[in-house]
Length: 291
Image 1 (tube, rainbow, N blue to C red):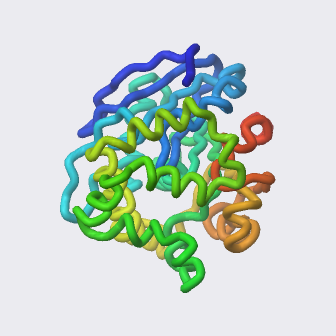
Image 2 (cartoon, one colour; image 1 turned 90 degrees about the vertical axis):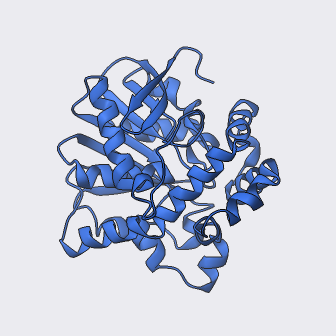
Image 3 (spheres, rainbow, N blue to C red; image 1 turned 180 degrees about the vertical axis):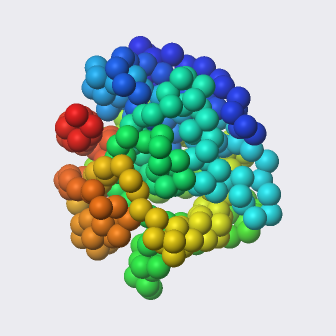
């Protein structure tokens, strides 16, 4: 998917991460979302690599990365724990300060990384999310039906694992088509990478644990940050799809302004998969903001 990038496996904490690196310039960490892998960046990364040294991991338990053993409180898959893993990964490459972009679940990891390790992040780009606490607090009947996977994936094991595992290709394609504004913009190469990963029972289990953490410990961490008045210190830019996030409530900027005093946004004509449906516009927006 990224032929000019180097792929390697790196043990960080209790995870063994599959990481692609390439490009030259200041460091930029790119984090993918659910139900994807680092391959989601394959159209954007070549444009960013002309200006930045990219680090593109599969998140713990996703794709080709091995995740940590899970604990009853799901701390191992909390965004706080994964954020520390990502910060430690960047230290392995000698990057003590870096820029950061994340989509979907990766954007939630990036959100916690900004709050928990503020001295590490220079600028943060969030793709098509609002923070986890706000997502849960905004739920009503319509939003619960529209985003049913938040509740379904958080059901105790092994219920979602068994149901998804009975036909993982069907469930993956169902989600991608449900969230995409233009499904055909997702390339066969990236779809093959997602399918290969999603056919592994251990990946299904790890990704469910990610959502179980999102329904429990992540909410608690975000609530504690809000109660303490914590805000993201670095500049933030939110890129969102008019055909997905906006459909659920318009621009997310007012919500993000509760977490940052320096935030702007850009809406693109696409669904949820911003970096794949509008790759050139997404890359141009990221580059303009980081510059």
